[in-house]
Length: 487
Image 1 (cartoon, rainbow, N blue to C red):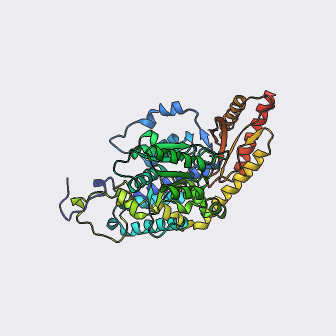
Image 2: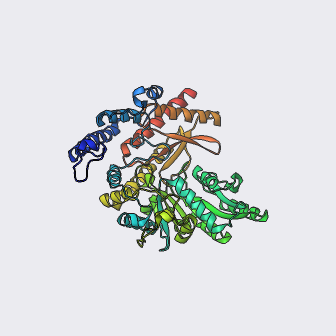
Image 3: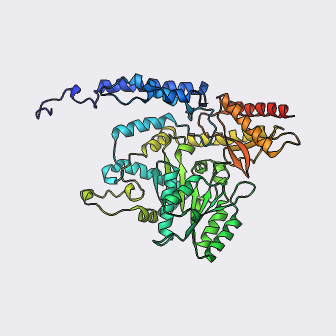
């Protein structure tokens, strides 16, 4: 029943709006829980897959919501059980795949942004928050020396950013009937690129996979030859994809040479820097990423290189007009009351119409900690990767694939003479199984030239020298035991 005008509504009449005291109590309970989570991380597991079947069969965990509410502490207990199994990404021992550690200041930013709950698809709906995010994007464009007319958008991650990038390249470089268009990726490119091409409407054979050299960098001459072949066949090469930090080994494609090739052939140069891009904040990263400033589009993942929570990606495009032309939609009568704010309408430069104040989770940590704190953290990761490489390379029972360009070290077991490649692959897999079974560190694997290799990827802001040393010693110890048993 709606109360008469002027009559106050009791708190009980609005159960979705806690009182000030109730809200404070909720925050106290939540704060106690999350601080406990962070406190447990150093001694907790980096990986725990034991008892997953029992967890998924837990009726308490999976029961539907009831008609009446339950205490927050009780619900957080359920969440804690749910989150206790799987890959524990915030753990300092998580060195598998590309770690995403999540800084707690970004969680504070999310809390504030969610309570504010402002719409930022159109600038006039939240001009201050849009200005804040727009200025961050300009800072990012300056970090990569992009021109003043560049534009960008914060996305949910690199996959959506790659999709928008390819849609922009398609719109700018190809006619409406674009099915003759071809794009070029290395055999080390992230799967998100091929997926983005499919979502953008390209057939599977439009994505040309180019071999890499012994350092897992794309072979520029092979790209050039394939482009010439495709032109002769009546196809339209339109986009060249470079990777600035591959997922397998952290290799950086020859960006300047690829930029030259793209310019010579009139192709769009897209750089996937989701993993490696933010190393540009460091002196070493800036040197190793030379040429990235020539990209037509560039993907970054702040939930990787800036340690933010998952769901924080970015697309930068050299020609902001091209980004807008590819994404702006038809006018809608229901928006006729919206006034122009002299700021970008993010709905016109991305697939999203409804979007939250995503920039707050990037703005608050950068201003709270300062850029140098992130730079020092990234420099530490480069240092730790060098330590891991040097110690593993000195082990007679291991072969290290290459010196790290960023923060990934790939390795495999080396058996005594007479051991086959298949035997070494099996031994490497067993080393990883034993290391991960101890749960102190979590490593993952991949294949290079058909060979099974282990990976150590150091990109967690909590990972320190002690934990890297522990990981290296675990790998070396188990490798030594396997080689001795095979001898």
